[in-house]
Image 1 (cartoon, rainbow, N blue to C red):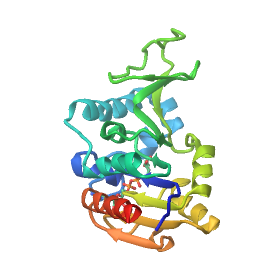
Image 2: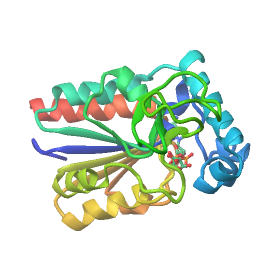
Image 3: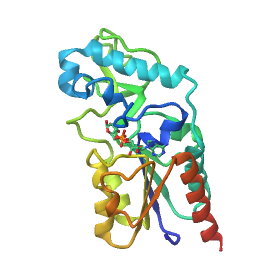
Length: 240
Ligand code: APR
């Protein structure tokens, strides 16, 4: 287990599943209902921007108005950030704001944020909770039709990768929560940590991910049960 070292926590859609947000690759997941090629690639946006905006408008509206709220797993990670003597960095693949609403502050959204949009011309991201229509005007440069979700699509570069790899190289503990280990570069983070050779690695997931064998420790079950217990163990070991 980690000493006073830094902790990097990777989260995926599984951490948000129990309080109402769908995952992607479970049997009832988002990609079982809509083709990612139609809504989550730059080509899809060029081909049919209205369809892509509608896909994210629906998810944004559900997040804002659907009664979705952080679960005990999000709360436990915020507690860890407050009480752990070293740095705790959450790197989330999720585009919801549940980590923020639970109180986490040291957070990287490597796949972007559903509650932000950005102008393709002036490239500025804006906080945005309303629907986006194809002809909407950029609040900054006032161009029409240049607004897109501030979400990283397949084939695009995830955000803040340099900061993420620095944290992975330096950490004493890497924990992966609620992700299938299907999408890179996130799925490769555990190999980066193993290569630095010092850190403990743990996976907390409902079922073994594609990279489960790469972790020194695997705990299977729902995040809302596993994560608070894991955090309590970490903090009580640190106090002893
Ligand atoms: N607790 C813990 N884990 C859970 C729970 C739960 N209650 N419910 C589901 N899971 C696990 C599933 O077993 C699965 O391994 O969460 C994982 C969800 O996997 P995916 O649906 O593939 O989601 P994710 O890994 O976050 O996808 C990565 O793919 O489509 C892109 O950009 C999208 O960020 C996303 C990326």
